[in-house]
Length: 358
Image 1 (cartoon, rainbow, N blue to C red):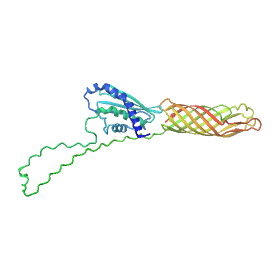
Image 2 (spheres, helix red, strand yellow; image 1 turned 45 degrees about the horizontal axis):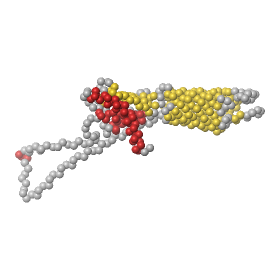
Image 3 (cartoon, rainbow, N blue to C red; image 1 turned 135 degrees about the vertical axis):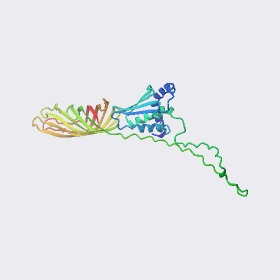
Image 4 (cartoon, rainbow, N blue to C red; image 1 turned 90 degrees about the vertical axis):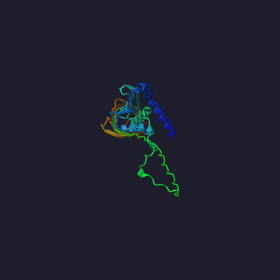
């Protein structure tokens, strides 16, 4: 994305975030100005549970100052009070901005959200910079060097300090050069801090599933997984077990079939939706009715998963997913007498899981 397009998107996001607060500020301006209060505002910045990786208050103040030419508009004795609260809401982060006057009356309120907390704090800083610009104290631009006031007439010299007479033959003295006028130093912009690195969390899940294409008929099974989760990515190890089923219409030479497999599951997440790649390996067990002999047959597949993740609380979510795998190593059962059976080229599964985050 080009630089001008990034700048336009940034300005558009700032205007969209600051518009409700700016409108509330305009409506409350007569009441606030009648109080003859000092300029600036007091800032309260609070982070809720599961937001330890979010930027701290100094980072927010630097973002606001960088948009106001290096001036920090937040002071202890400010007439207005700005409250910023960061909370986690499911897989995303929510920020609430509240503006109050010196008597505690609400002047404006706005809510923002983002799946990345660093981006959310940046948007809050852009919104606050637009609202705080009218509260800046008047004066020269930050970083400028004040010029010295013009000096008055020199004090009269004492009689004993009188300069010696100048000889008429002495060459005239050159006029004293005036000191150069001090040049204002350019303002040094405050760099915008980078969002903090996305800290991984532990995720553990379990659920029930229906599978087809591996065993001779539809199988009911269970799955469980454990792994790490970032905002946009997760990596898990998953185990699956299918309950034994009767292998109709092959009753007589097979008593039942069950399966156990393990999978490596990398996933990408976007809001409530996710997509994963699957690499699965395991085996099928069958018991022959005539001999009671148990056989283990290998199985392997590659495919993908798509699903929906619905947040239930800050640490719990429900998942509904569907798998589609290509059986790269198909299971074959060949009895001595009767018809044989082979796994389908493609297998499917639908699962419902409960996920916990730590």
